[in-house]
Image (cartoon, rainbow, N blue to C red; front, side, top):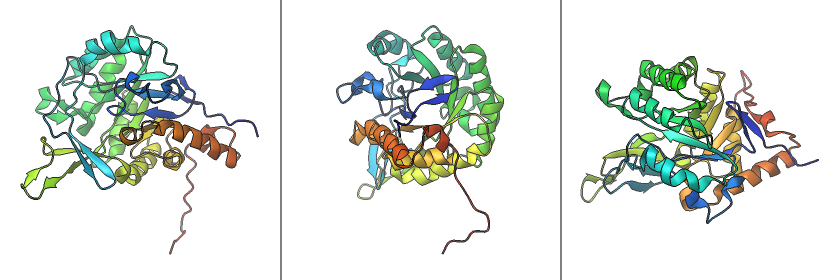
Amino acid sequence: MSSPNLQVEISGLHFKNPVLTASGTFGYGSEFERFFDISELGGFCTKGLSLEPMEGAAPGRIQETPSGMLNAIGLENVGVEGFIRDKLPRLANFQGHIIANVLGKSIQEFVAIAERLAPYKKVSALELNISCPNIKEGGIEFGHDPKMTFAVVDAVKRHSKHPIWVKLSPNVTDIRVFARACQDAGADAITLVNTFIGMSIDVYKCRPMLSNTTGGLSGPAIRPLAVRLVHTVAEAVSIPIIGIGGISTPRDALEFMIAGACAIQIGTANFYEPTVALKVIQGLRQYCLDQKVDSIQELVGTLCIEKDQFFY
C-alpha cells in the first residue's frame, strides 16, 4: 500500500494533516522552532489576541492536578498590533496554516481585531474565543448565552475576510444549542472544547491554589468528556468540528476523529512533550497503513453504535 493520505479540508482550507496545536499552549509558533520543524504541522492556533495587550492574572496561574492541569493565565498576550508587528514576521517561512485565536470584551472589539487582521494572508482563519466576559452585558460570557453567541459570530463573519472558527465552552447545559447558533450565524467550523471550570485548594492554608480561585481544567482528565461532546455536536450540526481535549497520543486523536472531528488540536501535552504533535502525525500515518485506510478523512464520523446491544 502506498503512503496514506493525511490531508484534510476545513472551511475551504487545505491542511497537509489533521494535527494542529491549541491556543495558549504553543505561544506564537516560533517559540517551538528549536524543538522541531513546525511546518510539519497541519497548522497551529496562536495565543489569544486582544485589541490591546493584556498582562494577565497574578501568580499562581497554573496548578497540576491528577491527569490534568488547572490554569488561570488571565489571557496574557501582546495584543493584535504586537502580534502583527513582532510575531507574524517570524513566521514568514512557516508552511502550515496560522489560525489566529481572538478575544474581546465586546462585539465591537472582536470585529475590530478581525478587521485589523484582514489584510494578512499569512493568517488563514480566525478562531473566536467566546469564553470571554462580555463587559457591556454585565459579565455574561458570549459562550454562555446562545443569542450572544449568534450575535458575535454573525458580526465577525460579516466584517472578516477570513474563515471563522468558534471555540465553544463545555460549561453549558446543552452545547448543541450553542453549536447550532454558530452554524446559523455563518461559522465555518467549531472547535470543541475549551477547558472545564475547576478548582484546587491548599489544605494547609485553606486558600485556593490559583490567584483567580478557579481555573480551566485541561489534559487527559477531560478527554472522555470532550470526545462525548464532539460526538454530540457532530450529530447536531453539519459544519466541520476540530476536536480538542487531552490529546497526547495517536489513539487519542483517532477517538476524536471517529467521533466526528475532521481535525484535532493538541494542547496541554505541548508543555511536557514539545514534539508530541510529530508523534501523533507519525502514529496516524502508521495506523492508516496498518488498517489499510487510504485517506484519513475516511475515518471521520465512523463511530458505530449498535442499538439494543448490551455489554456486561
